[in-house]
Image (cartoon, rainbow, N blue to C red; front, top):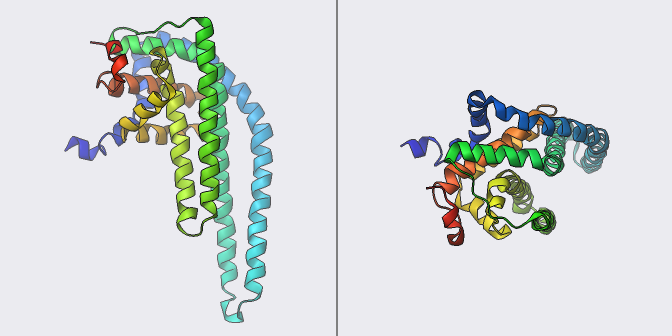
Length: 279
């Protein structure tokens, strides 16, 4: 019954970023690991808001106006008794601006995560280690050396980029198809964005165990629907301007708590990594 009420883990997955508040309350020393990342997020956000957001907002206005103009030209050729559709066009223009604005906020927050997680990696990594130690009693690491760490980090970002580009093109062409294509494309975009966010926020504890990129993706799917709930709430938290400067560290920490509870303790690691599950 509890599984049904929580959406078979979906609602529980949504709770993990907020669970960090309880950890900070009992281990206030961990707050020192999010101060520098928050400052970095602030600097990054200034450049993104000034550059991407302002430019993107102007672009969305042009795109919306173009759509409305084409619809107006279409209505000119319709019978006069359909003149009431003009009001529908006004409403549609208003809705399009809201939709494009939300998508722009999500994109800006998504890029903030990508840059913020990379630049704040030393502090986030230490926070993740401390959270794992508190949650499981120890921290497991497979050592590969400094250069190995750098090389794996570069490969991780490249593989994420390949995933985004390849599926992004597929979703773009899917959007061209009338009917289902137009509906499935934004849904696919949300799933892709949520998957990338899970990769970013789950990465610290998984990378310490040196999992392959495909194995990390597999873990996200194995932990559904909880991972879907986690990615959805993170998507919401990173899309809120200014608030996301504070919430991104909570998503990173929440990702570690999620991995400890729902992956390490439940034995969802690949078989060769099972020895790194806390007993």
